[in-house]
Length: 365
Image (tube, rainbow, N blue to C red):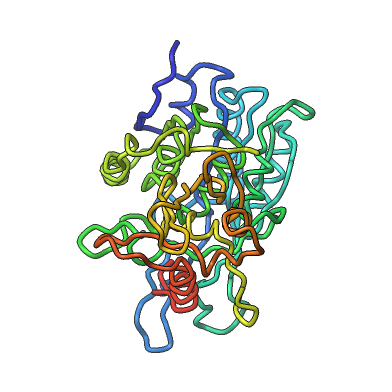
């Protein structure tokens, strides 16, 4: 039985997974229903209604029903996951502790929990609790002690050559990235591509198979395609399937050379922004050229891990810049990119733009 690579399969994930070969998938990312248990509509102080998660797929009659559902899809995922494979699952305080218990009961071994800290969370409009400003990701392996993929150097490179921590500060999905239909959100819980970028880059390699059993608007498939991984998506909803297919088909993967896909090897008063954040959030692209001091003859290529490639040299924007000028270098004020009109723009301006957008979100969730 062969895997249906780069394919969106329709149906209930637990049932569809049974049709796939055992021990065939390298990485699974799951964004299951959170069972938010919302009882009433939510309103802002000005009495406008909040576009909250009230979809039928997030409603369960009881915790027992939710646990049964969770045990079913996690068991099915374990069957198709390779012994060397890992699984990521994301959730909030509503469900993640129940999911974590079931993961351990089924024999998964926890490698990390990662906190996604949202720079622009939805406020608690009633003012009766703390604003929910984070979600939790559990990273587990199928078989304790088995060899698994962790691209430590790629994560370090993405974070300006500092070891990446387990708190990931990333904006929620908003603005141009948010997929919409007739001006409305296509999916109520669309995750930012920057989040999936870290998940996929850290725990898989080019050519690996990445599976998402709750495919939704297709973020996992979109990022996997950009990073030259195979993907498989499972989704029940016709509308989401159409949205995801259109989104992924629009990505021109043939424009990305595999050479640039994977290399494993400051304004003090402002929040620190790693160069890798510009790549994760789509401000710069893998394979794009940067120009030193706006000289077209001196250019370097952006790699997936946040490093630059200049001839045989690979390193951060500061390291490569320093080698070129044979002196210490603040890469933010030396490297330029070309805009659509061919103008040279300092990458530090992109950093300012990213800061501004993070500080002044559209307050979508």
